[in-house]
Length: 299
Image 1 (spheres, rainbow, N blue to C red):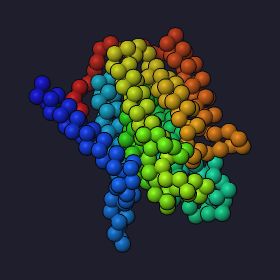
Image 2 (image 1 turned 90 degrees about the vertical axis):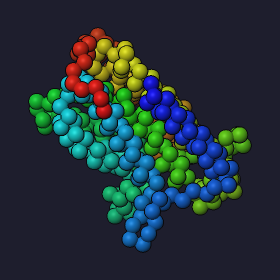
Image 3 (image 1 turned 120 degrees about the vertical axis):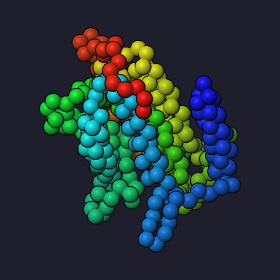
Image 4 (image 1 turned 60 degrees about the vertical axis):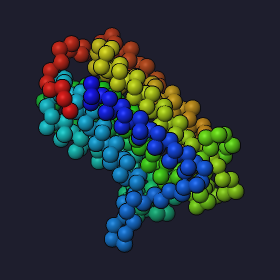
């Protein structure tokens, strides 16, 4: 009981501090420095710290669930070692492929993601492929593909919500100019050239943070209380996240385009269809989740 009180007290205090800090940044009273450390010999961005922290949190949450299901811990850790680099590579190559006009003239920057340019859909596809590859290479893996994807889908929305605050520190992933009460001030050096005369923009990163937390609550609760077949959580995540992303993308100014189509919206529609099919298929023919919880239950 005391631990719960302490947890909620700390969380409440954090949210209050974050609210007032964000309010000051949105008004322009505080101008953020994207670098946490900016020395001649060492440069570390807040974006990297936040993304790294989100990976650790996601790992701990997924590990907790998989250990309950009897998955070998060392095998899961080994899987993470393979999958994370593939996800980073996927996110970068996806971005590069849809901004080729620029990168065709700067080939030396293709494999330097720290210079800017990652796409969440590319990273997701990297995880999908990396998980499949790991299981194929292991042959006698202690978890199935859909079991692994369920664990991933159960925690990744929380990691995504954390990661969007990296965009906050970089003044990126914002939407069209606005006068809404929650408008966000963007310093001139971070404004897109055609919007240089505007000061306040739509904080689409914040919209996605809120939506990701809602998706996390739904898929996490569903996995713990209602999931009957492996793959259902994964399917539910694909549907919920993609529906939100489709609508939020229409507000963003930095969308990747293919002719007159926003790529993220096209992919979102495809993933909703895939998710709906997968949910129906696994519900009918999927492998049952054992009602008996095996393994340890503490993180």
